[in-house]
Length: 452
Image (tube, rainbow, N blue to C red):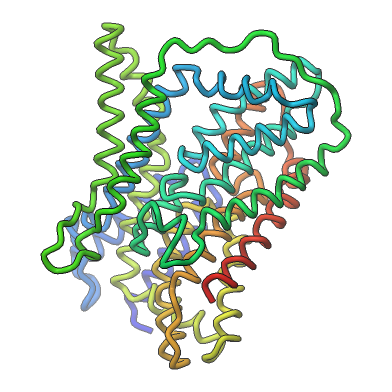
């Protein structure tokens, strides 16, 4: 193994160890690691390894960055309009008791999370759960945990539901409709929904003793529906442009869209909402509030990781890891099944402790190499989408095993902490483990039978 590969692997391993050990400073660790790769590449410390500042900027997926920022900004306006609370009030008013209300809120959170960032979804739905738990004098901990894990699950259902889905869409050249039907096969949306139905049965089982009635006398009033229209327009526009190919997928002479199209759309509707609010209120405080709610933590972390992953790719680390994992088996369907199983369940375990965003960003190029290596070794073409979807299934749902495995879980526990409830890891896992296993096993089996 070349010196540059060994050194890059050491830096990469140290980066992950530090991010796991010091979660509050993960973005700084990622950026520091990125800077180190750029310095080594710019100074030509190792023969054959060049990585300049401009190269690093080119490795950052600005489309993903803008999608996250723009969507979170629009969601802030959506939350401020109180439309999510009204939607939840209407939903809960139809439920006969606590058990069904928790299930309804969890599934409702999941539906929203299929189109809106997971953390934003938890922030929208958790206050409603807190309110009804206070009314009937029960602990809100189980309800908030179920809402958080349901949000994580459904984030994998569509292209815009979660950062991991956005990353996968870019890597596998998927558009919005591919998550529903991909090359004539059932897409990830229906796989996720099947997992949601199974996990819903688990929720009913866990809350089978909660039969107290619920009564909501006053519904939340919504005076401004424009933010809701902007959010719907964002999703509809993303769907519409998904039918236009990127340059890499376009036929010769065919019209194609720029790589940052989706990001520009999300930022455009966010800008429209902000300008409208400023004109209407003649107050710039909404601008400050909206930009404050954008998750700079995730954006900085992702930007740093894009550069780090670009560095280790140039150093040959990705190829080495992919070839090493692929070498576990030979060719044939049994080897492919073994590799698929390893990817899914390794992702579940690691994502329980490592945030699924950096993990997915790291593993996407690795699984592509694994698919290529298996195809070469076995003489049979292995569709990389089998591994891509397996990775998304394991990484997205695996974060539900522990309270630190996903940002939505951290947000939900933070809300409970403000209310005076300290959630221990064992308490969270009491609900997270059965939910996760039921959903992962369902997805694991469906993806294999669809894409094998």
